[in-house]
Length: 193
Ligand code: FES
Image 1 (cartoon, rainbow, N blue to C red):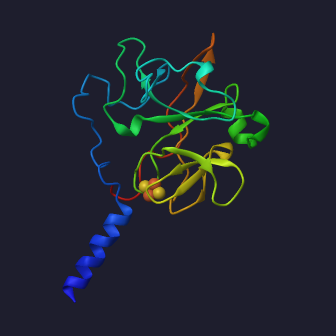
Image 2: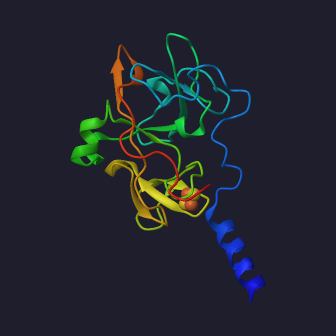
Image 3: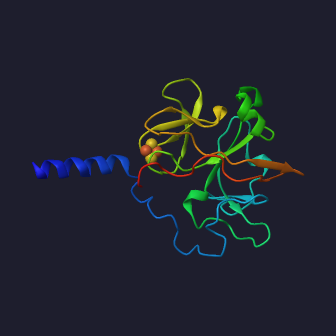
C-alpha cells in the first residue's frame, strides 16, 4: 500500500515538475543586478542562439513571428539580468488588428513582451506552434502542453497552466526597444518546479 502511494507520488512529481528548472540562479551569473527583475529603461538582448547577448532590433521581430527570447540588460552597467531564469522574456510582433483592446494598448508597433516561464510548473515556454484548439499559432510549453495566446494578454487557451503569462511593458524610442515598467502579473510556476 505504502509502496503504491509512493509510486503514485513520484509519478505525479515527474509529470508536474520541470526537471532541471528548479534553480533560479544560473551558475556563474552573479554580477550585481543580474538577478534583479527587469527595470524600466533596460535594453533587451537575445538570450539564446547565434545572436546571444546582442541587442534585439525591430528587424529581428517580423510581423506574425517567430518570437525572440531575450534577457533585460542594464544599459548603465551593461549587466545582463540572466542571473535569474525568471527574468527571461519572449518577444513577439503581431498585427495590431489581431490583438484584443487591452493587449493592443500595451503593444508598441505590434510588439509584446511576456515572461518566458510557464505558470504551471515553471518550464520555459519554448514553442510557437499552431494551437491544439484553434487555427492560430500560440506560445506553447512543451512540458505539459499548456498554450498561451499572446493576442489576448497571453491567456491560457489549452493545458494545465493556471494563469496567463506575466506581461512586461515595452517602450520604443528611436527604433530601440526597452523595458517600460515592471512585470504585470505573477512570474513563475504555480507548482514547485
Ligand atoms: S510547466 Fe507544465 S505546462 Fe508548462
